[in-house]
Image 1 (cartoon, helix red, strand yellow):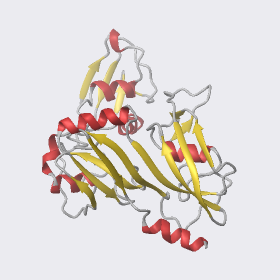
Image 2 (cartoon, helix red, strand yellow):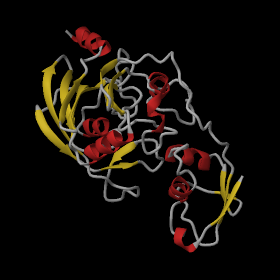
Image 3 (tube, rainbow, N blue to C red):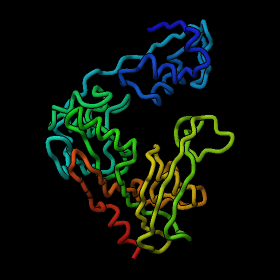
Image 4 (cartoon, helix red, strand yellow):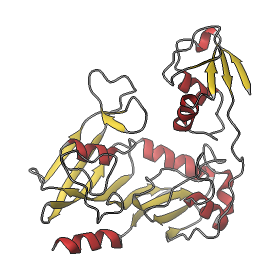
Amino acid sequence: MKNIRIEKKNSNERIDKFLAKEIFLNGKMTRGEIIRQIKSGNVLVNGIKIKPSYILKEGDRVEVDIAKKNAEIMPNEDIKLKIIFQDKNIIAIDKPAGLQVHPDFHEKNNTLVNGLIEKFPEIKTVGDEPSVRPGIVHRLDRDTSGVMIVARNQKTFLSLKQKFKDRDVTKKYLALVYGKLERKRGTIEKPIARAGNYKKQIIAGKKTKTKVRRAVTEYEVTSEFNGFSLAEVFPKTGRTHQIRVHLASIGHPIVGDDKYGLKNIIPDKRAKRQLLHAGQLSFELKGKKYDLTSPMPEDMFRFIDCLD
């Protein structure tokens, strides 16, 4: 149990943001996990259960009773890595769909990171939060496949992090979507924010209460099938679930995407996950140009074959 008395400098701040910043700076618990703990009653203010959106007041007494997570990530030799490329600075992985990137409150041992530290133990000290995401510069959703870059040293991590921030990394995805797009090439520029329950992202509106972020996605349709389209997608910003949210917002959600599918579209049971694949990452690092690619995975090919 941890007891905190709120000072004036922290008043007028949301409880979930305060805890994420002040209590869990070591990164052992994400903000989403903190929100779940608040909703479960493991965080009280003045002895009362509150919502994650509760605004703190000077003098509030916050009680935090959350069991500590395991501090050390355990290597797992059973996680098989498909390495596209490696040198002294980076490792490029072809991540399969269904593999979570790093441990969290629910999954601790069967993630990409568990496999990485087994084969590349030097990354244990690399990153902003090496105790949770060693070497991880960017991420892919569990059910999104494709190219991921891992830094092998801190200098490379910081350089890559800045490149992603400055949008100096070109990203190309393949997405199989429902329907035929009226415009075969276009740009989707719609701001994105978290939903009020923090379970998904939404296109922000005038009344959106969570933080609104600019989001831009370019796309080009490359093939059309019976009621489906295959598109190359180029996210110009890096928001959570950006491609999935944007494509759904124009009426063409990704096949197999249960979270952002539309009510008027019956899910296709042949797709076991969202058919989204990170096909290419291109950037320059320390004077060297990298162009890392991953071919479209077998499950996407199989689905398309069924459409012919």
